[in-house]
Amino acid sequence: MPEELVVVTVFGMDKPGIVAGITSVLAEYNANIVDIAQTVLRGIFTMTMVVDIGCARIGVEELREKLKRKGEELGVMVSVNHIDVFKYMQRV
Image (tube, rainbow, N blue to C red):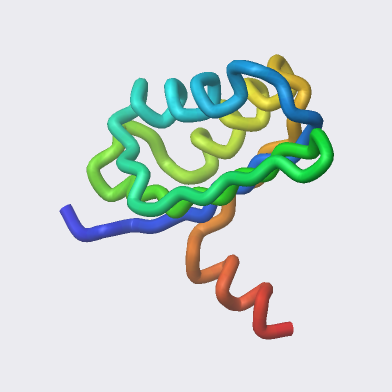
């Protein structure tokens, strides 16, 4: 299958389990993390991932909903955008 990249961003107050919670959803649907960066600044957690869903058992819309719900459970905000949309948004 060809590569299909999405950008996943996570933002909220730092606490244990955020990375595990988000990445477990990705693993459940066979989504592959291509690149990842995270940081904690004064207790504020941020994570950005580039994820390949080309071989995943889930589409971008359903993944967005699953990760949004997981984020709500974890107390963080999660967004999922196709990489082309993300690149276009950054041009503005």
